[in-house]
Every structure is written in structure tokens, then in C-alpha cells.
Image (cartoon, rainbow, N blue to C red):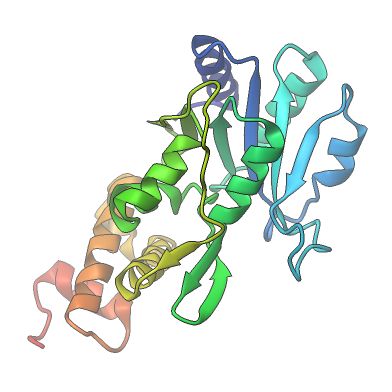
Length: 255
């Protein structure tokens, strides 16, 4: 398990390696019980920040909005704020984005990533939740969609469910031209269902009746996710926890 200090040191090391003295953070405030905006407004030197709910019907929900902020790692107050966040913004709330893009351009791109379209419906794609992001990148988004995420950053970083640092290298470069990012992420039925499977697997992970598995949190989640996907492919209807329990026991009834 990585300590908050070790995680912060790794973030700073990657920034130094890339020749970047700033770090962008995505903070998911939903259900957190805290609002970071007042503290951000008090920081000096001034911190650039942006609500992903800007110009949406939820724009006044500043205590629930995902926030993007850019911290200057040469400023001790900014580093102290980073220390507070890595210590207290746990449970998938904090995503690290190491990017050389201008802040306004990056803000609009990351906001666009949060807007999903599925058929005639629209909604919020919570990619900034680090429990969701890895599967989006590895198996749910199309190559073209994934490429848009990759181009905005040199690295994406997060702590996994076992509090181990994970880094995904992007393709973002200095002085990029012809930057194009879609205003929303369009999902097909299968992609939408797979995102639902992430939620189902996370609920199973929190179910104490499966503690007997004795695996790491990430291993257990991976198992639950694969079984949730399988249940969908088999058109299973009913209690998913019971299905998983039967599957683990090798007693799932044929469909």
C-alpha cells in the first residue's frame, strides 16, 4: 500500500521527468461531504480551477461538481494543498492529469469527456472516478474515443483499489496544433451496458458475503466485473449476487 507522501512524491517525480512544473487534478466531490471551492479561492498564488458542471443545469452544485484544478509545484502552498488532497480525497476521488495544454483548452476537453450520449439520452460519464477510468481505457471505449483521452495528457495517474499508483501514458505533446475533441462521448448499447457492469461489480466488492475470496481488492473487482459481463451476455435476470455465488460454486443453472 502506498502512503499519501509516497504518492505525492511520485506525482512530483513524473512532472519533473516530463519537464512540467504544474499538475492538473480532477477531484470528484459527489457524496464527499466537503466542498473544495472555498479553499481553492483562498490559495495564493491564485489557482486556476474549473467546474465540469459549468453551463449545465447542475452548475450551481459546487459541492458536488467534479473540479479541475492546476497546481504549481514550485509554490509551497500549492504543494501543501496537493498533500491534503492525496491524503483525504480517497476512494477513487482523485485523478492526476499531467498535461502541457493551456488550462482553458484542457478544461473544455475534460468537460466534453464527461458528457455522454446514448441513443436519444444524455448523461454524465464519470470517467474522473478512478474506479471507472481504467476499464473505459482498456476495453470499453473505441480506439478513436480512447485516442481523444490520450491526446490531452502526457500521463493519467490514479490510485487503484489496493492504493497502488497506476500510470497510463498519453500522447499529449507540447505545442500541439489542430487539437480536436468531441463535445460528448457517444456510447453504443454494449458500451453503456459495460459501464453498468462496473457499477454492479463495485457493489459486489462491497458485499461482505464475498470476503471469503481473500483476493486483493483489484483481483476481486476484476472477477466480479467479468461475471457481471457474463451474466449480461447470458441475459440473466434476477439477483446478480446470487448468480455470482452460484458461479463461484460451479452451480449456475443453464440458461
